[in-house]
Length: 166
Image (tube, rainbow, N blue to C red; front, side, top):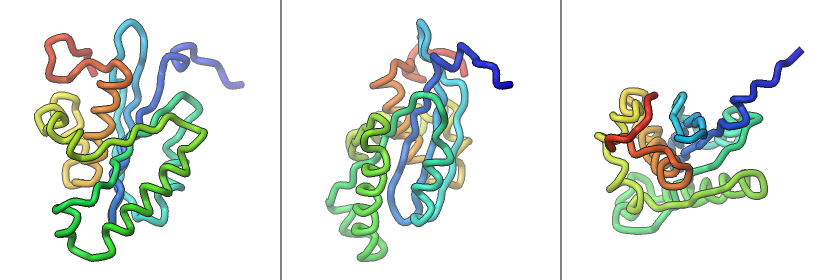
């Protein structure tokens, strides 16, 4: 018999997604009480074809929100290693947006909006830098997840003196 854990009512996932040739995904488990606390973090990189399945697998019964990098055509995108990378990334944004639509809140932000705040020092203070070592796409997903958790769901800034413990 499954026991209901009342603490789960106050938990939620923030799932960060970095679309691209190698999609990165980071799932943060938050506890929302009088102060939001980061309980756990997981990171993966996948191939584009399994991204929706990976998102399904990472989704749970509890509330969740998706923090997706919005693809912006700019100078960096134009210098991409392959001409098709931009098209694949745009398609992946459409795929994730469709997957989330009507199911979960979706927060679309450009890398230019997130990266200046979500520095390596901030990721390190949150315990996400080592978690994403060797996975640069998962690290970018962590930037989006952390930004969303702090800006939208009340997680204290990991670099502030008022931050919670992990």
